[in-house]
Picture 1 (cartoon, rainbow, N blue to C red):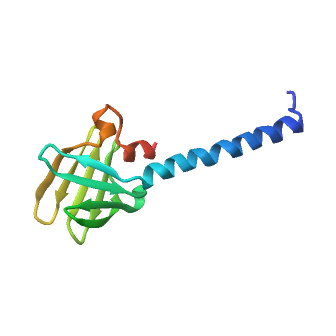
Picture 2 (cartoon, rainbow, N blue to C red):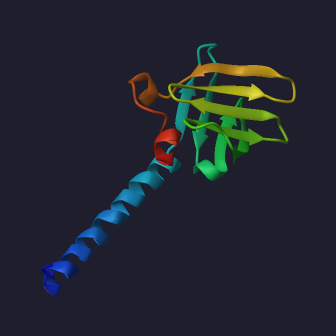
Length: 126
């Protein structure tokens, strides 16, 4: 086995150090940018923030949503006080009120999802 020269190894470390912050910043910027979701029943809502503390703006109010356990390939966020329940499954999202048992918004997608991309929340989980 041949050892690499120290000069090469330190240069490689510097290269990785320069690349990793930009990757982290790209992920963080995707989280902080508000994402508008348009739904089939003419409803809209906005999400922003990291998945573990997602902020949902719905009908002029903001709700802090807690991430809940969900099936593989999906994500679920709940605000137990209001009853809001956001479920993101592959190509769409749905917003429910678990207190009243009603579906508030259906077939919701971001602009990127309408172009065939995965929901940004699901993409960040990988």
